Amino acid sequence: MLAITGKETMHFFQIDAFTDRAFKGNPASICLMDRDVDDDWMQAVAAEMGLSETAFVWKVDDGFHLRWFTPKVEVDLCGHATLAASHAIWKSGWQSADSSITFHTKSGTLLATRSVDEIFLDFPAKPATEIDPPDGLAAAIGMMPVYCGKNDFDILMQVETQADVENAKVDFSRLAEIPVRGVILTAKSESDQFDFVSRFFAPAVGINEDPVTGSAHVCLAPFWSSRLGRDDLVGYQASQRGGIVKTRLDGDRVHLGGNAIVVVEGELMV
Image 1 (tube, rainbow, N blue to C red):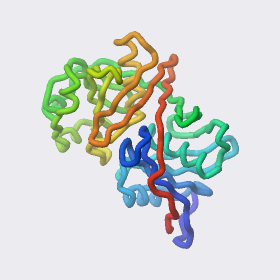
Image 2 (cartoon, rainbow, N blue to C red):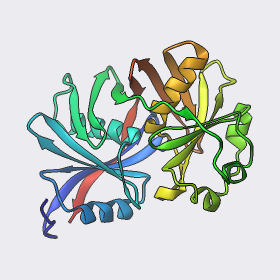
Image 3 (tube, rainbow, N blue to C red):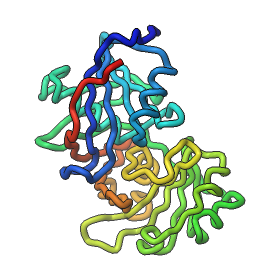
Image 4 (cartoon, helix red, strand yellow):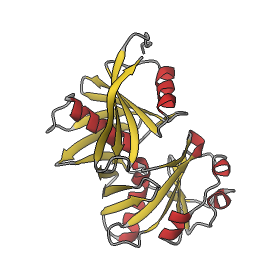
């Protein structure tokens, strides 16, 4: 890895992901780099940006290397910043619009393709295994779960109704004491437009509530597919900004679909 000299500029985007409207969905900063750089610098940039994720992308022989940072830590998988990074690569001309994108990440090889104005990501499925609710979980969320499970990253907590998801008042300080990346709160949708709703809380990694979380849907897709009997589903993440994630379960993979829109493009002075 190389250090940043302080005399360079770097192209970056701020992109709202899993939405076709500005100021909705989940914003991510995307830095397009000419090489790998120092981890501490990337973490400092992510803290400066202050978004749930900042992604760093640079070209390698067979695709692109991709890393994701919250303002506090590096994470192993992020869906919305991958969607945003794909949009930035196509928009900047780093990859032709009719070509797929291969990302090399801490979660293995990820593929992005586009169809008309939608982007589709090929991610590993991360189904939850049922567990007893950890001590303090119900108190932190404010209700008892119908089901509680855990995968490599997060706790999945199903509750009775969509209203329970939407109206949950979370004690973030108590939730941060539970040793997981985050907690997915979910219920069956009461709308004909969507199959399930969710919210995602990750105070332990510096994100009290994430607006739209692609990586949570690699857990939500197998969970709801098994209960609803369909592989193709549409989820709505019921945060204040809100966002729509299409999911397709394909064996041990999940395809995530959504839109993205650029709201800021410029040069990062480094």
